[in-house]
Length: 409
Image 1 (cartoon, rainbow, N blue to C red):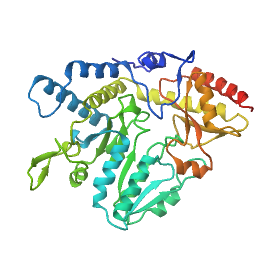
Image 2 (cartoon, rainbow, N blue to C red):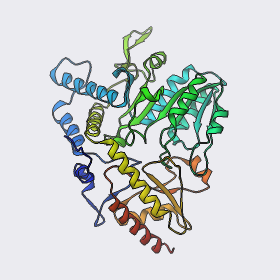
Image 3 (tube, rainbow, N blue to C red):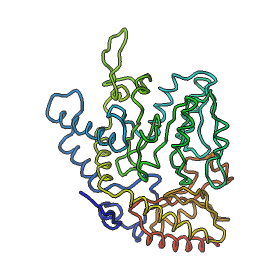
Image 4 (cartoon, one colour):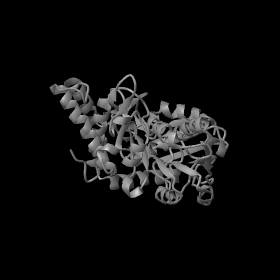
């Protein structure tokens, strides 16, 4: 399968969910920041596994187990190559970005001591805030926050001042789920490493929009969720440098993560199994491998240009609306347009848009500290994927104008 050269209509035809009506209107799906739709090839992969290959992996000698194990490990290899990791052993399957960050917070966190500092930014998702707060409570570490500007960009001067010899970890989002800001992570990683700090990138919003090369970025950890990159829910990835992962204790105990168990003591398996206790989400991993194969069939450079065009187009029109304020106007951003309208609650706007067949996200987007910074309760967020079109944005704009009229603007 290949959809190169890039064609929006050709891509759209591969996603069954896009070809449906909601309340009698053609569905316009602008909630890709929350989860993406799934191409038919991923749905077929999941159905094939459960229908014909269903078996537990790694320990079985029978045919189905061997087939499932081969497919599971092939998916790991596929992902390793896609993000440029050095070896398949550096790819740990988790439940998603949140689970990956919690794994690092627990296992890497065991290496930290009271007074050690962890840096995050003011635009982080709750999943990249709360695990570090729990670690600080457990170990006596200190959590520090890099401020942002009103445009939604990192204050890089403040970042430079916060870095010091006590900084042990920088945990930062690659792309903000609320603002769409693309952070200059390569520069941040280089600076953090000068102080001996390790760096975790939250890639939940970048894996589906950017070409990722973890060796080029030189990040120590990279996390992402399958469901945001056109794969299944309940599956995700933690990439970690092998030497670093080797030095960390297991996150959970159970089957498959052990080498030998006695009642006196247990020894642990090698990477990556050391961090994959119990029966994993086998179908999810295989389905994620299929999603990555799908992405490799697309001209992602052309897709990224298309997404940038959609973002610029939508933001340019919305910027002309009287009483509408864009939240997040970074120079380098992608695929997200967040806004508020004077006198209107985001939930009311989202509800009226839904009745017109348009799916957007409303609320604080799991970034409550960011909402506090802007002194707002939440935003309306339209987030795009490469299967969206300018025509859909035009329909969205008309529906938004109608909603504003209903609400009395």
